[in-house]
Image (cartoon, rainbow, N blue to C red; front, side, top):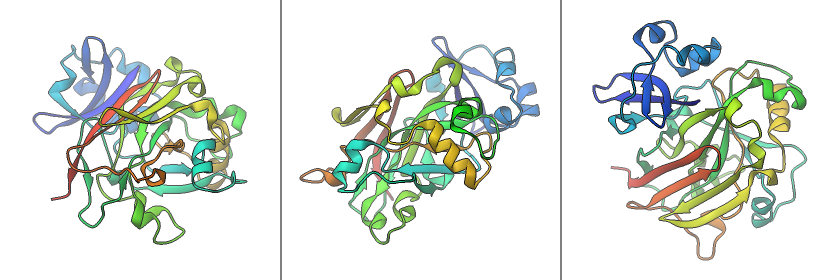
Length: 281
C-alpha cells in the first residue's frame, strides 16, 4: 500500500492510501480509534485501513503532509554513500555518522521549501527514508526487516553555512520547512528489497544525483542495529539513510536552491517527491 497523511480543504487532518483510482481516506470510525498514521502503525492496524476507507477522491483535493508528520524522532545518517564520502575528502567512518532533525523541519510532497533569509547556501540531499513499524531495542541487523513499516523518498535540505559553524550537523539540518518526505510511505511488502532500487535527484529538471541504493556504506540492517543500541525505535520513527555524491556544496561552482527552483527526489519502486523552493517571508 501507499500510505499518506494529509490536510483536506477544510483544514482537517487525515490519513489513507493512494491507488490509481485516487486517495482513499480512512473512515471516521477508524480515525476515532487511531488518530493518525503513527497511531495506526503502533497498533499494527494497516490491514484494517484497506477495509475501512472511503470512496476515492483526487489526490489533488488535499495537501499531502510528510507520511508520518509527528514521528517521535527523525534519525539521519551522514556520509553513507561511497561517492559522497569521496567528495567530502573523508574516509569511510568506522561507525554510522548520526544526527537528528526536528519533525517541524520536514514537509510533504509539493509543499514549498523555504530558503531562510540569513543564508544563500540552501542545498539538496536526496535520500531513502526507512519508517519503523514495530518497536524494538538492540535489534540485530538480520532481524531489522521485521521492524520496518515501509519506505519513502526524503530530501534532507541543508543550510550549508550553518552546518559548518561547528562539527555538529544539527544547526544546518533543522531549519523549519527546509526538508521533505513523501509522496507516500510504500509498505515493506510492496518493496521487499529497497537496496536494489535507484535514487535520482533533479534540480529544475537537471539530474544532479544518481546512484544505486546498493552503494550504501552501511546497510539498512546495520543502521537499525546501531541506532537501536542507543535508543528504542518506535513505530513512525524515521531513519534517513544518507545522500549520494553530487550535492550542491561540492560542485564547482557550488549549486544551491533559490526561489522559483523545483527539486525532485525519485526512487524506483517508490515514486517522486517534488517541492518548489520559495524565500522565507
